[in-house]
Length: 182
Image (cartoon, rainbow, N blue to C red):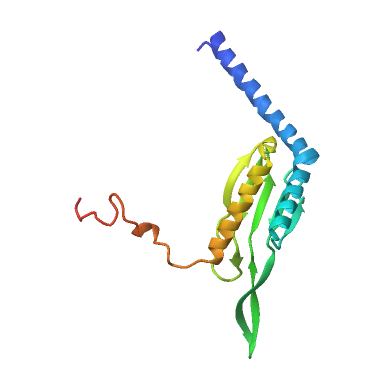
């Protein structure tokens, strides 16, 4: 088998692309530390002050270059309790949800929503990924949109009921009208 000059040229282009991608991770991490982390904290603080949202903003930095800025609604008594003895009960704790800006291994930023949940009351819902960004792509309008989406999601969780039709019960093409054998 012989390789042509074109084959080597294709391989060289792929190697150059690989080097560029690896270099991007270093640049993205530097951008996070120099600028983005501070900007996110300031933007989140400004927005929650304007809206009077009771929350805290935390920086989680247990692992270098996998830091996160987290807006959390904290935890509270759920109003539910489990019996622990005669006439005694233990309050079940509710985690009220959070909006997370998490560095990924490659320096990009994952934005996700952690839904509220009540301990010992079912399983926590999987987080909802809003987007993955290069650090320089995150601007104030995106942060506001993320906050709006977060509040919409946690409000829907808090207001859960069965008024919404089950996804399997919607009327539409080939739904609920298929006959046996067709």
